[in-house]
Length: 123
Image (cartoon, rainbow, N blue to C red; front, side):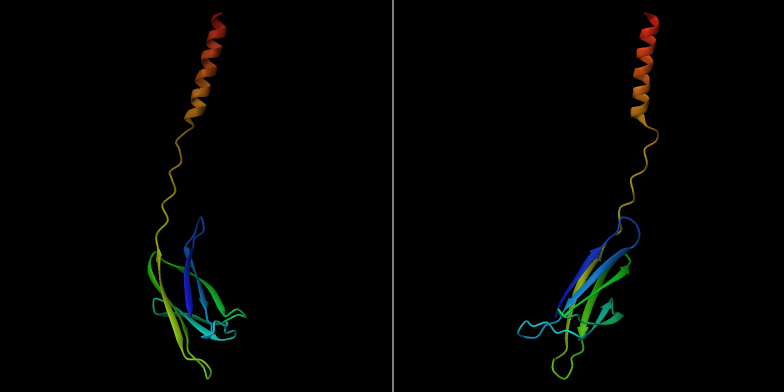
């Protein structure tokens, strides 16, 4: 079994991880319709059946920190049990930059216009 854990982060909101598990036999043939249990930090998140490519893809909301993701195939009458683990590090997003106070370029343009008008009035 192969397992990936990718971080999926939006511009706003909580962090999400996308877990992808792939199950195949010893010859590299995908195993469709097999149950895969997904755990995050030893908590069962759900059981999903593999698709026609032997894949399971699921997304979960997680808090910042280090998370251990595990996918587990319990085995059946044809195939032995299999499992894989991956560590996913989720960091907090940097806070947004503070908004600029005022518009300094507007003041510069206004000052230039005032100087030009003053110059024209003095002629």
